[in-house]
Length: 231
Length: 205
Image (cartoon, rainbow over all chains, first blue to last red; front, side, top):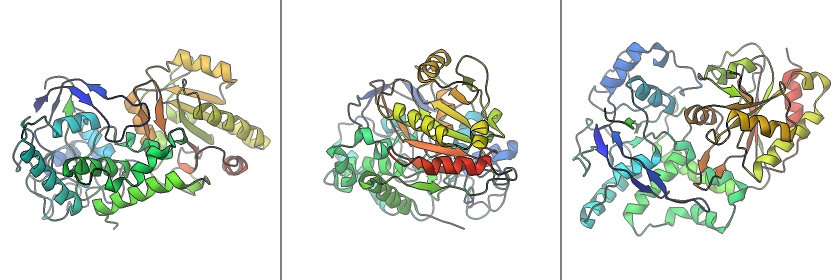
């Protein structure tokens, strides 16, 4: 794991009156959790095997790239990030290793370290957008992409990642208290910041989290774990 | 097998957000129709682990609601607009139930502000609002437990940093096994369909 300094996180689309929130320093996995690691987890915890998991906790596509309950097979290499995992399963895995999922604020802080190199940021944003636009094809091995300033790999352009509070996104969409013209900006929001690839990539993540349900198991959705205290 | 690309989900999500924004007529959604016969679905909320504490202090696992039709609402005590209206709606639904249904139904109110809504404060809130146990159960759990419960019933919420929350306004009906069978979103929706759905669960054995 790598330490990530705390900071202040302003939601991409703040609700009315929402202040930037302080984020305490934390530790984050260097790379996404792999198939091999998740296999070890389901070996030990039967209820998280593909054939055992209750529908409340994972939809039918859960671990569907694996060949069997305890067999990865040709479509899931041990070193690739595990995907087709629900939020419940991701949380349970992190708990089993004494960690937790990062919050959205933590993930975004870790993934967007302050940099004085706008060209590098622009390059990351373009790579990210290329992935978000077409999240297809074979996953690289976890840790294959260059580390960012915190030493963290694969935060951009490889997979989407679960966060602990994904269901805080878009809460405003159905809250009448927040019905005001600013919301129209969100609905027209595909255009928001489109001239700025970096904020557009952030918008894509925000919108993606807003579209999730806790049981979803998707081809390019994986996770990594965090801790509040040193490992 | 259903395979959705992340992008398809994304697009659906955006559409949903905009629909929610322009939609004025609240809708009832049938989540699941199986009412009797044990949880054959694997969808019972009573699989959620964790210790909940009822208003007052006693321990109250969710599964202790098993056997009763339950109307579930996530709310918070200092909410000054939507939550009081929703609680009032539940009280009005109660008044519309058949005698059989009224006898059986339980109202579960779970706070997504556990830091502020301690069991003591929940008990005070229940007294102020006339939400008497055992029919009304106000529940306190850890932030993680609340996030999980909310996730299972599609409730989204977000602290705004000012003591308030932005949140989904959703009333969820659970069958006797804790399986969500129907939910209703928004405010100012007709209450008779909710009462009818509760009565249907209560009168099914």
